[in-house]
Structure formats: structure tokens, C-alpha cells
Amino acid sequence: MLDSSKEITLLCKGLKLLYVEDDIKTRETTLHFLNNFFSNIIIAVDGEDGLQKFKENPIDIVMSDINMPKLNGLAMVKEIKNSNEDVSVLMFSAHSDSVYFLEAIQLDEAIQLDVDAYLLKPLNYKAFSEALAKVLKKMRLLKLAKNYQSDLEFEVKKQNEAIIKRLYFDDLTNLYSRYSFFKDLAALKAPMLLLIDIDNFKTINEVYGSEIGSEVLVKFATYLSLTLENEVDSYTLYRISSDEFALLDKTEHIIPEKYEILIETLFSKLNNLTLVIHKNKITINITIGLSSVEEHSYESAKIALDYAKENKKPYMMYSQAIDNRRNSSLTLQCRDVILRAIDTNGVVNVYQAIVDKNENTVKYETLMRLRKEKSLKLIEPFDFLDVAIKTKLYEQLSMRVILKALEKVRTSEHTLSLNFTYSDIKNRALLEKIESFMRDNPHAGKRCIFEITESESIESYEDVKTFIKRFRKHGVLIAIDDFGSGFSNFEYILEIEPDYLKIDGSLIKDIDTDTKAYTLVEAIVGFSHKLGIKVIAEYVHSKIIFDMLKQLNVDEYQGFYFAKAVENIEKEKK
Image 1 (spheres, rainbow, N blue to C red):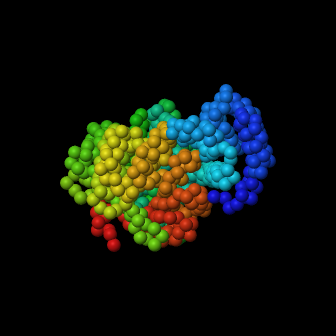
Image 2: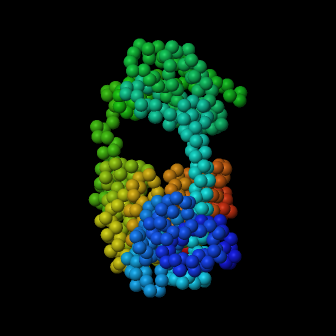
Image 3: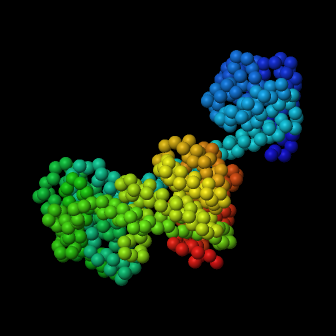
């Protein structure tokens, strides 16, 4: 609430009010009253006149009677909201219209139209001031949110530009990066690819240390670039992993003799190459794998490279004769693992603690794992989740995890956070099971947080808002997961009013060295707290980062610094 009527009046002076009233006497009386607050009032004599004047003028607040000829107040406001959903609206009616007034509210038209307040005539100073204060607070928060959104979008844009620049070039050698390599490779139908690997580079790192190892890579990259400068054909050179370099010829015509000459040149210049680094003489040798197949070029060149290393050959061209992979694809193999896990109760819930500033556990996030057949070892989502989505098995996995977590809530005193993708939100069978559980266990919802992953995959925010409304009535709290990861809809945050924002780990993990990440986190925390939203930081992996986040007034924390995900949280209770 604003502090005083003086402050309310001061804020209103800079706003433009559209006042719609068909009764002349009431209009004159009310105008005398409104002039105490507003200095810029546009008058309309009925709904049609009000709608026309709204279209002709930039209006901040609409104040209208309900029961009017030609076009009633609610119908007019509906048209106005279609034009500008952010405009604030105050509706009023006479005591004699109270039945009509109440029927409008009972029909839920106030909620549908987002009317800020309904008042009775004649206007009461206190009631009107309170309603006006509510409107001004809403307008102020909306403006603040838009300013935050603008600032954050600018920072995100700058950060994204820097990230994109880093994506295309390798930081150490300044050659094209792994990202560039796979992007270029995907654009070619039948590329000629050479993978060049430094033999026993791991030993060099172990003997001389990683700093000298890095200098070896830099000098080797320089020699490799100089060797290719004299070639007639234009090759593109990339560093795609620690000691693995790729040479890509984008020509559409493969000439075997040309590559034989190239390989001879590379070996003559680079094999048995001696580098002097800090008075250490380091001799390096290379192995090369080649591929010219149309599909899976990198995998094929890698097979050729590995074959050459295993058989102590200087180089090898890929052919089916050296390809010992199983005929079935890796995707199908992974799919079989997932299906076996579903059939043998191998879909496992693990729980990672979320703590407060004093490192006291306040809740747990529920995470998904698969148990290897005849083993206690768990498979991480990184190894199966994409395949599960691609092969349409994700919904079965997710349903098992969510229902198991709800059962844990029922049989324990723990508060659990459960992850929901847009696919889960659209899964009617899952939502009906959750609804049934909540009805049978009326107090369980208060110990559940539903984390919604915000991403471009969300097709309809109305579906999300319906989902939230459905389960909030059971006491469930709402969190937005992975906030700040690149897709962050601030208007959406304002609409659904989540209880928590979980800042994405990509921002948290480097805030001690990345000033841009720190600035973004600071802005997100400030923005959230202004709106009454608590903030959770993920991927907290060190005391330094924990201390920095506490200084930023983050509310809760999650990461390996506090606890790894475990199956049995009963043992974790202190």
C-alpha cells in the first residue's frame, strides 16, 4: 500500500484517466471528486464513446460505470483489454444496480477482464483511495518489471554475443573450434575428413605438466597451420578435443592421389617433430584417420584413427572392413536399456538437498536415474534422456519418477521438488493421477514444489497457467527451473507469479570469475525479490561461490558443495 493520500495524489497527477459515465448529474458530482486526484481526465458519455476515446488517446487508467446504454461497461472494457491488456480498470455502479453488479462478478467477468476493483456509487473516499493505491502499485511493479526485463535482455544479448564468438574459435590455439567443425561438417554431403592425433599426449601432460602440455598444443597448431599454407587446395583446420585436430576439405570431388600427397607432406613436416619448451626437448609423433563417407563422417574417421593406433599404423582410411561396431545403432541400444529399466523397476528416484543460508536442508529436488541391469550403478540422465525423448519413452519414465516422489511425500515428512516439462504438463493421464493423489492426501500438496522447465518447447502458456491453477488449490508451490539459461520470458513470470526462481547452473558455476554472470545473477535476485519471489541457486560447487551468493541475498542453494543426489534421504537426516 502507498504511504499516504498525498503520495497517491502526486502519482495520479501524471496519469491520464478515461472516465465513462452516462448520467449527467453523477458525472458532474464524480468529476468534482476525481479532480482531487487527477489533473488529466478525458470524459466519455457511454461505452461506445469511451471505446472511441480510448483508441484516440494514450490512457493509463479507465474508470467506468457498468450499466450504460449502447455498450455497457463490461463489454467496453473487454474491447479495451483486447487492445491493451496492461491498462488498469476501475468499475463502479449505483446501489440500485447491485443485483446486476453482483451477477457480473458471479459470472467471473471481473477475473476474465482483469478488472482491478469494483466500487459502489456514490464513491467513498477511503474505498476509492485504497482501490487507487492498489492500481498504482500494480502499475509501478509492471513498469519496474519491464525495466528489469529490458536491462536483463541487454545483458543476455551481450553475453550471448561473447559466447557465440567463443563457440567458433578455440581459446587455446585460435583455430576453429569443435562447434565450428560439426557445424561445417553438417553442411557437407560427402566431405573429406582427416583426424590428426598427437601420440601419447597424455604422457606428455603427466611428465611435463598441463602448462607445458598446452604450449605443445599451441606450437603444434602453429606448425600444422604453416604446413597447410603452401597447399594449393584450401583446407579448414580445427581443434576438436585436447590433442585431436581435424582437417576438412569442402570439395565435392574426392581425388585419392591428392590426399596421399597431403599425408606425405604432413608426416614429413610433423612426425618426429621436436619442440623446445622451457629448455625441455619434446618429440611428438602423429597418427591420422581419414574418411570420405557421406554419413557419420566424424565417427568413421574416428574409427579409422583408433584402428591405426591399435595396429601401430601411421594412418588409415575408413572402410567397412575395419568397422567393428554392432549393426544396431547406439540409439536402439540405449532404447533397449530404457525399456529394460521400465520393465524391471529400474527407474530410480534420487534426491539432492536444497539448503538455506545456514546450510540446513529445507527440501530435496527429485532427480531421475536408471539402474543398470544386475548392478547397483546408476545411469545419469545425460546418457539416456535425449534417446528417451526421441523414442517417445520419456513420458513413461517421468510418470514413474513423479508418482514415486509423491508416495515419498505421503510416507515421510520431507518436502520434495518435482520436475515438470511441457510434455508432462500436457500428459492428461499423469495429471489425473496427481489430482487423485492430492484428493486422497489433502495435506501432501503443502510439501510439494512443482518445478516447471521454461523453454522454447512451451507451445501454449495458457496450458501452463491452467496446470498451475489446478494444483495451487492443493497447496502446491511453483518454481521456474533453469531461469537465465537463454530463454527467459519475464512477462510470463509476472503472469504466473511463481514462488521460486531457480537460477540456471550455467550462470552460477562461474560467478567468481565471470563478471557478466555475476551481474545477471545480481539482477535476477533483485528482480525476483521485488516481486516477492524466492531465489534458489543451482550448481553451487564451492565455498567461494556459496559466500558470493549469500552476499547477493539468494534464499536457497543446491549443489555438490552441500550434497550429492542420493536414493535414501532418511539416512541424510541430521
